[in-house]
Image 1: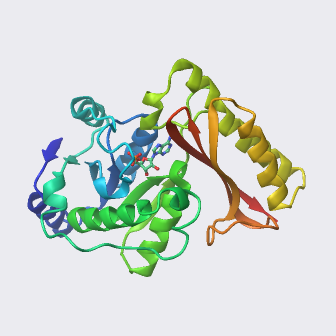
Image 2: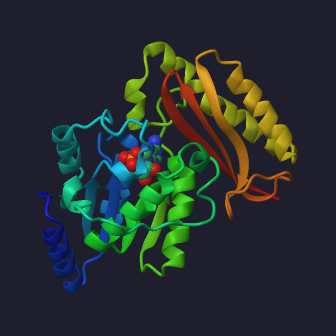
Length: 282
Ligand code: AMP
């Protein structure tokens, strides 16, 4: 496994692999890896000749009051985990190379980015689509792997790849959970034992909503109201949103129908956590 820090070196490697007719699988991450990330990595290794994992904590997707500086980092541990999984290249560019002085170009998806997480994190998805586009230009992958855990992000990236004719297959991987159902996240590290227990309310509420819908509930506002009530009943939780949206356009649904996503974001103490469930409703 090779650690690549220079953007030009990464591009040369990708060119060489492509000339040799090798397929490149790419897993973009912000590091501090857990089983959720490693599942994407294992799938990429399985599907492709060459696997590249990037580790880059992207400043443009964090708001001014958010946790960019404190975001957990542990490169040595990440490299050990990736070496065990037989990753070929770890791409670890420097912030000042990705965003040099004078940097002025952004990629923005104009639908579905101002709702759910986009409402409380106004420039978040602009930062995500910009860095993912840039990383795609650096790594030139055939396939890129994303987790369903960040459901809105995944749908927005699909939109961008389609709209900009990027010749890349976006592969979605299911959410990996801890025992008890809490979705794995690098931010779970911030939780105290009591908060970790309280955080279970997020997935429990999603599972309840799934059951209500599976039993025939089709009123999106009713499901939303009942989910909000469940989250508000947990003293350590502060609700950001609980919504039933269409996976086609990320808009909230009055009538639940088609491919949907039930999504929740809540602060547990001061840690913001998100989770979601996907359903096909006739
Ligand atoms: P991050 O490092 O948080 O930017 O995540 C990198 C990738 O890992 C994204 O595609 C995430 O959706 C995915 N990911 C993070 N947590 C999980 C999880 N618990 N299950 C599945 N995928 C995940």
